[in-house]
Image (tube, rainbow, N blue to C red; front, side, top):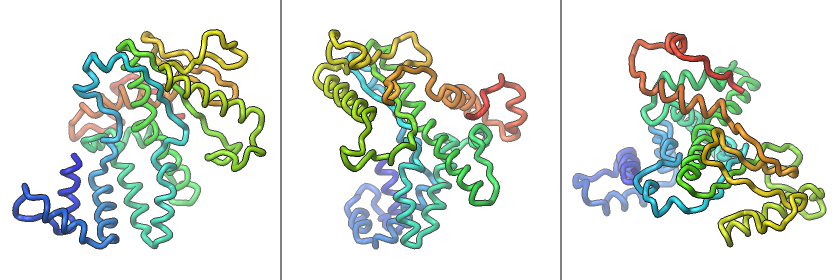
Length: 300
C-alpha cells in the first residue's frame, strides 16, 4: 500500500520512470521536488483516494495465530479522537500559509472516507443522514457540519474498531481492559499548566491512572493488588467474553464502569453500513433502501 501511494505521488509530480522496478530515479526525483509541490500533490491525493480506511485495525492472519491470543490488552478511546479535532493544528497552519484549498481538500477526503474502502455513495448518503451532515451555508451551519463529521470519523475509524478489537480479544481468552475518556470543558485539553491548578479530584484521577498503567506494565493487570480497598482504587473489571456491548472504565474522577459506548453509532456502521455496502444496485436510493430494513436508532 505504501509503495502504491509513493507511485501515485510520483505520477502526480511527473517522477515516474520507464522502468517501474527501479525505484532509485523515482525517489531521487521526489526528493528534489519543491516542498510546496509535494504538499499540494499529497493534499490532492488525500482528497481523491483518502487513505483513512487503512488506519482502522485490520484483523489479518497474524491475529488469528493462537500464540497472540493470550496477550493481555489495555486500550480505549477519547471523545477527542475525531480526525478533525486531531488535525485542527494542521488545518490552521495551512490556512495561515494561505493554502485554504488544503483545508477544503481535507474535509472532502474525510467526507469521501465515510463511503468505506469502495467509496459507496449509498453508504455516504446514509452517514450524512445518520450524523446530520447536511448544513446551511452559514458559519453556524458549518460548525455543526464540522462537529458532526468529527463524530462520524471518530466512530468509524477509532471508537467502533476499538470496541470490536476488545470483543475479539476477550473472546480469544485474553484479559482486555477497556477505557473511555469523555469530553470535558472544565480545563484545557492538555490539563492545567501547574500543580497549583489541580483540584483534589484531578489529583486523584491522575494518581489512579498512573497506578493502573504502571501495574498493567508490570503484571498485565491494571489492578495493583486484591487487598486494595475499592474506596482507594476501584477495581478495573476486564471485558467479559459474553458482553455485547462491553464494559469500560470511564476516566473521570468517579472512575465508574459503564456500558453501551457509541452503541447506536457502531450498530449503524456494523449492521446497516454493511448492508448498504453489499447493495450495489445503481438505481437503489437511500429512502427506498431504508423502507425495506428495520428502523435504526436516531443520531445522537
